[in-house]
Length: 164
Image 1 (spheres, rainbow, N blue to C red):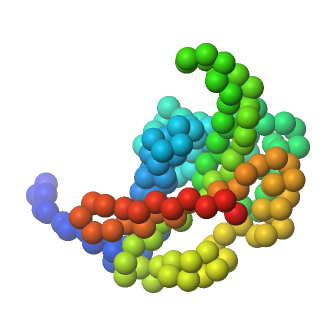
Image 2: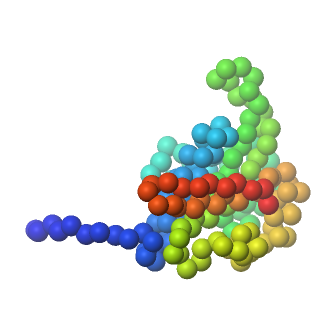
């Protein structure tokens, strides 16, 4: 078999799953390094980090979620990219009861991409959870976050996090 070199241009890629996975991995790193919160449930990037819980059917039995929250996630029309459970620190290395729970949606973009997020959050409404679902999630005690990962030139990226 003869192997040949091939150059791929991510900016020209139509593979939104690949671009989304890259964005999720960057967002995971951002959450871990900037906020100190670990994702409890991992979206597409779980294939690269199998040690973290991922989507397996409708398995939302995550420590810290109550029955109403689990039922919401099972029946929600959209799947979020991460579920985060921030826990109180009892002592160094020892975590206690859940303090806050987050649902996180990650969007990835870069220059030249057809649906670049130039319009800000208003320009991407149809790519986000519906307002009524966000309100329901909030009533159940979730904080809903949007993380936008903008891929820049030279292996740089800009990460923006906003509560919806």
